[in-house]
Image (cartoon, rainbow, N blue to C red; front, side, top):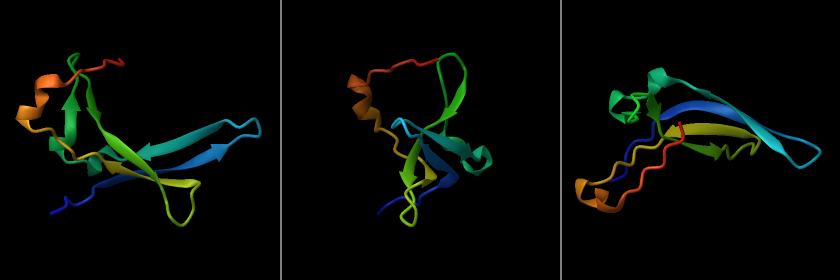
Length: 84
């Protein structure tokens, strides 16, 4: 059984003549259930998201909450990378 997707924002990709690009995103934290709001070791709150292009227009994006949570048994070899 698949989990219900939680959509929490949108965005748009802007491409430049030099080949670069930027994605402007809006994330609506009020749409994220508390169980998917994590806390870093330094006490900062964050959510994990997935960003996908819309099928109708690849310049537009939608944002989905990453609802995957590891089983307690899987945590043995997890490496945390701190980007604060």
